[in-house]
Length: 174
Image 1 (cartoon, rainbow, N blue to C red):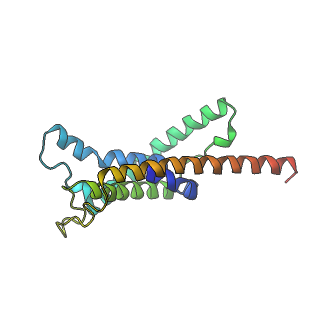
Image 2: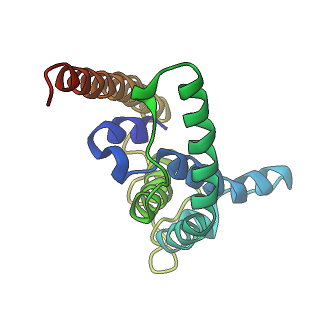
Image 3: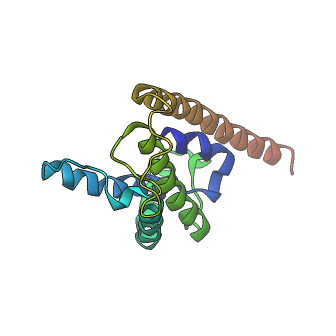
């Protein structure tokens, strides 16, 4: 989620972080099933560009209802606690869902390609993994953690700035 959290402040409402999260989970269903079955190869067709695009399309179909349900719950909670600056506009746009789904599946593919040897991201056109071993396993996780912390801080700063600008505007009659 670190890569999504660092992108969210800049993209704001043009990017659905919930859709990104759904895409991450969907991408790991195939390896999860293969782990459960004790398969030798965990990452198959879903961990290719073609597979990631197909899964992104699937996520685009299911994510809007999930996102809008969660946004409604979120808005109810922040309203209850009198924190209107945290309200999210309803509903989540189709473009934000599409970007979240594509960014979620494709970034997952890239990050997994860096650390898993059984991934063939260019399959069925090329069996090689040109990203394998470019970064260490721990390096990928450390980078994602750093991006997540920086992203959360940037998002909170942006929300606070927006809130206080709105307050100042109301106070000065703007």
